[in-house]
Length: 115
Image (cartoon, rainbow, N blue to C red; front, side):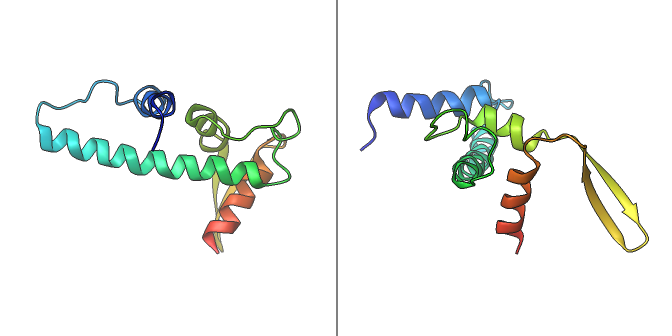
């Protein structure tokens, strides 16, 4: 059973870090579907945050001991990475900048989940 402060923390993360503070539609079924998609995204981001903490090359891991990452920090560090999508004759490349501190973490998660 979750204690009240723990469940309140997760509730505030869904509301404020992911964005659906005010549900956009007046119909219950539509709002239910928006919240369902938000829950799926929430779970995926939580898994990404936990998996990134297990990776040894994570740049945050060296600063201090962290057991859990907030969704906002996962979104800012792993989702908002600046990259170029380059088309070559043999396929597409996702190219990161020269200095990208979370490239190794992103690459580790991608290779772990993609194959």
